[in-house]
Image (cartoon, rainbow, N blue to C red; front, side, top):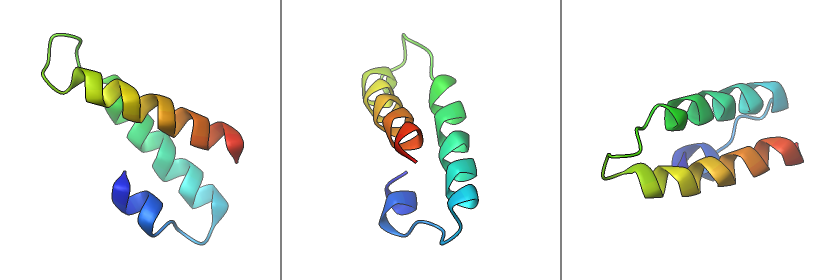
Length: 53
């Protein structure tokens, strides 16, 4: 996700598609996993970014 934000695709639709892919991936992280809390923060951020486009 950091790489996506650091150098986003020039085409907005490609950016939205990649961002949606990140969101889908973050949603697969289960609540009992160590990375869950961090994933939820990234998920919230990514969803806000997608809505702002």
